[in-house]
Length: 488
Image (tube, rainbow, N blue to C red; front, side):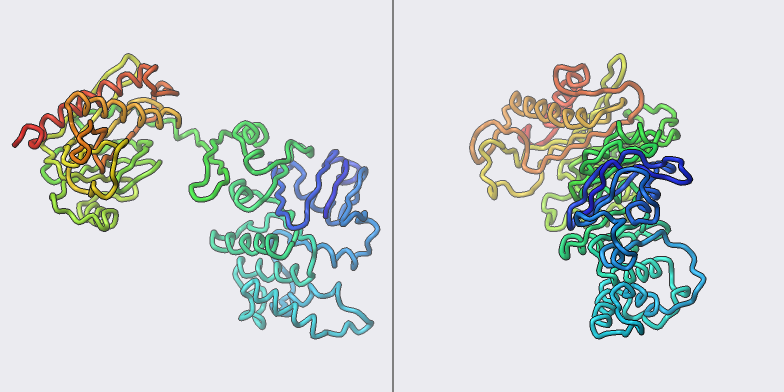
């Protein structure tokens, strides 16, 4: 579809783009990235034919773009520039109509039924049908951008070039615009080449990315191959971290402000724990990085408040998340920063202690009952209803955990919990085998992300060994305090 071979060019004899080569396939959504001054807009102007190449060639459908007349090229290629002010107050319909110029024939440029069909189609596609007779200047920025997109689509191009199309648009308009372009690429074979300022938007919508650095190709690859911490730090000269998008298989880059590292060092410990009949809470003076299976605040996040709530033995488990949210709000907790768990165990039987190492410490809190103890290797599903007896484990790490360490903390804690159940001879009532946990266990790992970096937490490490000892000891204490364990 589009092919660039060793393209160089610039302004007044000064090279801006140097030796760029790549191809874009029909129906591909191709993104161009790079810091200010890297040559993104210059390259797009060269592809559109506004700036000639000083060397190399640009071909459209195997034909050099210099061989097309302007009108013929407009039938194949359309350009959507950055949204700017416009001096002429055309109506929406008049503005979109200009996109049909390349297809109109004859001296009098007669408007045909086909022109009208295309006009109405692109107006409907861009949700501008109801604005046909309004002045473009009276529309919002997002609405204006949709008008000019409709004008470009009215050309019925094979290739659409865009220069930061979402610049100055709010989130809803950004999504609507890019969803429309992606749909055109996937369903109608429209080829899209777009400059992006926002790396994360480019990742979400583009099939491949070109990263420019000082006018040269740094890399061309899929979003995962381009958006790496090393490449972005090198080209943009700033500190970033990479994380997967939570809903789609695309990478997302996050800036790391210097201020994020300036919090005073905090040690999470027993003095921050409050034990009441209705709930146990811990409130941290700083936001902690968390990994949790709690009813609320599950998954990976940042939280300051932690709640383990007592519920009656006959608690209705049909909507635990919604009911827990209501409970937290009624009791003054910020649900956006709270991990919430629940248990039918009497909270007075909680076991907790702070465990210290030379370079870090952990604070372990366990509530435990074994009324629904389960052997996970022999579980029979429906025979283990969601009832009282949950073992809830909180692990607060005064240290800096990597993502690998967070996962290993969960593994090590689970192994230690199972060992405690084994030594206490806690059995699955349905299989009469040693239980590995209960059917509704929950766990929280929360780290201050201060102090020494702790890359691993398996049992071969000092951190893993401390976690194993603490979870084993506190779980045994909590179970031994559980009335049913003592036959009460």
